[in-house]
Length: 74
Image (tube, rainbow, N blue to C red):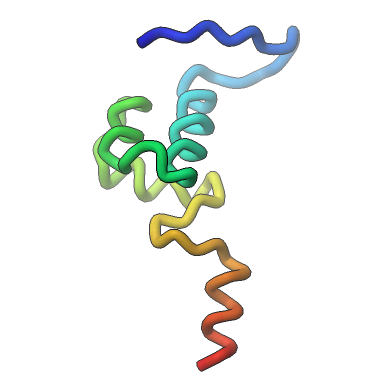
């Protein structure tokens, strides 16, 4: 599938960065698997999972605040 997206003039973002932003949010939303995300951006599954942290996406389905709250309850 091919999609055309009109970006603002002067936006300095690479194709990889844009693909990674989209894939990470789709993964975070549960719409794609980590394998599908990796395929979208051209990385191995392991590399994609490692990159998710840069985009503030948890592989475990928790955000930092939720994890911190759970740890405080222990």
